[in-house]
Image (tube, rainbow, N blue to C red):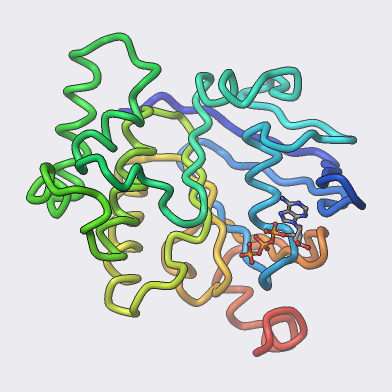
Length: 239
Ligand SMILES: Nc1ncnc2c1ncn2[C@@H]1O[C@H](COP(=O)(O)OP(=O)(O)OP(=O)(O)O)[C@@H](O)[C@H]1O
């Protein structure tokens, strides 16, 4: 069993140096649920995850983890309270082995036993990484790199895992493998906030779906309901 937590955003406004990119986002990620934010590219999905992990400043509204605001915390403290962000792309250390990259995910963990146990869990979930544990990251395939990125996130032992488009740029078969892993994480009762461009890919996998358009959530509900709403798919996701 993993530590659980709920994440809540209420009326969150945030952006970079210029105008607001997130314009009043409210959503809940309940313990043990997989919540997906879908939307076209450039409409603020990555920005949303960055606001939650403290990488950009929230201008208005609040973000709480199990009822406590994370806004006063540094990105480092937010990660330490259990929000793990696996960013877009893999951002692995290219000259380090798979094993060393995984250990980097647990850098804040002082308990060596805990780290060893997490490593066993990651290798059980992602046997491809176990087979390649000595291999240098730059020589991995795209799918293996993505799995190593997810594995490194899991090594942090967070209570909420945020995955930014884990399928991006991968071949269909490899995308299936990645979502298969996320299905296994779901079966373990993990709490996940997922960002994805294509709702069809994750409709069977997630519990709640939110459609983000131009910094607003324009629709929220069960994923299969969205899949039946042709007019929404056409208006916001191009069919
Ligand atoms: N570092 C940055 N500085 C300024 N503007 C940015 C920065 N990163 C993103 N933006 C802008 O914020 C808006 C939302 O981008 P964001 O990356 O959140 O979209 P997205 O929905 O995740 O799409 P994608 O999957 O293409 O990243 C875009 O207009 C983008 O140009």
